[in-house]
Length: 146
Image (cartoon, rainbow, N blue to C red; front, side):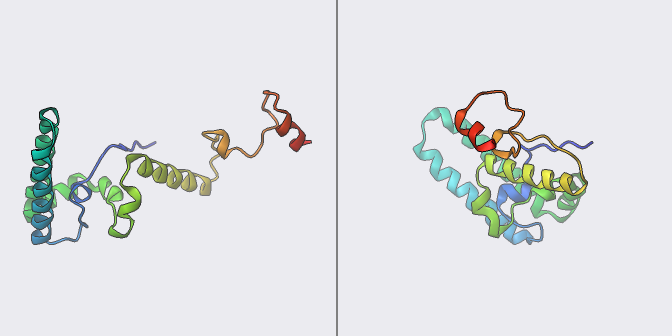
């Protein structure tokens, strides 16, 4: 069995770049994000400034790691599992929300397990096909099942 950290975010996804990006592209993406955060920092209340500052530190660390070839190689070796979570440019607008990423990963895992003929229970009534074991009397559904 394997575990997937759905909250994990690769440095590539954090910066919005592909794993094949050059050092100059990494620095440009980092600078753009930091500039946007600094502009946002000027307009937000003081409670949120700490969150923005910590986000800036994360982005700077990601940028510094990926901009240096030796550090980038170490990061790639240590985090090969996160390449699966790298958001591709064409799909980026679709997977902005964490719920969307979880849904897509859930679907991909369920489809993979279905190809291996693993029987999985539906997560909700929306995925069910057989309501015959449902004990709740609902006249409309009961009439449709007859």
